[in-house]
Image (tube, rainbow, N blue to C red; front, top):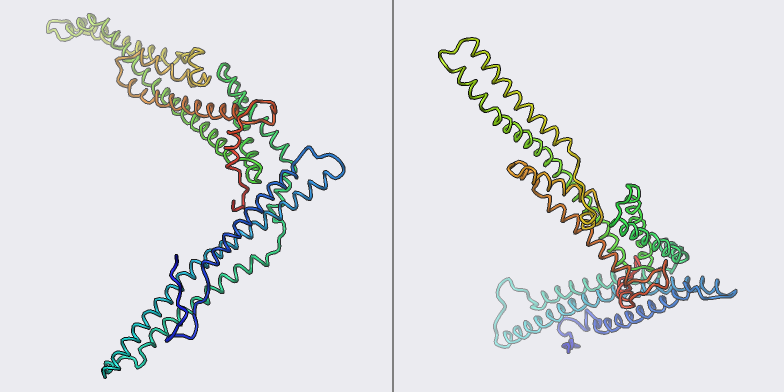
Length: 439
């Protein structure tokens, strides 16, 4: 229960300098909120009438048009109620603070007046420099509060007056919304068809890698679905949850593309390291095979009694052996460079969403690891292959799961008799809100 405000403002004023009833204002705010909610509900009912396809006869077109027009005006009126009660709520809060400050000043003035009266009765005089009127300071403070109250009251009155005088007329967006309402059935059907085609491409890709242009088509279809859902949701004819799922799908596509690029880079680095490892292995093997020739040549060159001709022949034999080792290394590196990329099995591709390119890249990295287990360079270059493969697989699995759940539980304009979950539909409807409203 709020403390009642003073009625008697003696000795500062003849009447309350900050009149007003914040609680009465808040009661009016609650009433206006109820009116706005009722108008919103009536507008929603009229929207159903305006979009009904079952109306037949000469009156049907006119009834639909007038229902749409009235629905717009009801929503505009509800918006004005909502803005006005927002201003009133602000004024009630400020008036509360202003009145509390005025009441505090009155209490201080009465306390000082009581002390002054007691001093006069006992014959005490005011100290030097003190004001002759002990209430003057309180009156100045109260005047400031009263001026502030008038300024704030004028401010809120002007804002409310602007809302009241604002004629209800269709804005640019309202006209666009009316146009969207007229074709929302066609938009919804086209969006649904594009969504099912994109899902079909994704499912076919699991068992059959599509051509490049087909994969590109799937991306453009996803963008088209997002654009259609955004148009419907902005006009209050679609769920913003659809927008979230569309954006999630595009983000996972982007994440998959990044993972594929990273895996390609890992495979390229591993390929270069594998060529170096092949070169080194072949050179070492050739050197080992010609060890006896190298040893004999070195012994002849270093022997004191060897003739000049013998030493020359030994150096020649040693150079030939070394050149043969280098040639063997270059041939091995060239052979590795020309080795085709490993071919993933159908099962391996399916585990990555049917993307054979990603599966081939990863399998080739694994092949090179196994082919050169002794090479530290190959091991270092191939690090991260599993991370990027799993990122690609996670992106694909997440996007596919969300899409399939939505297709299974949601309704469809393209397949109207498809079983669907009403609870899921109600859940999505909770996120239906027109752009520009204060629902």
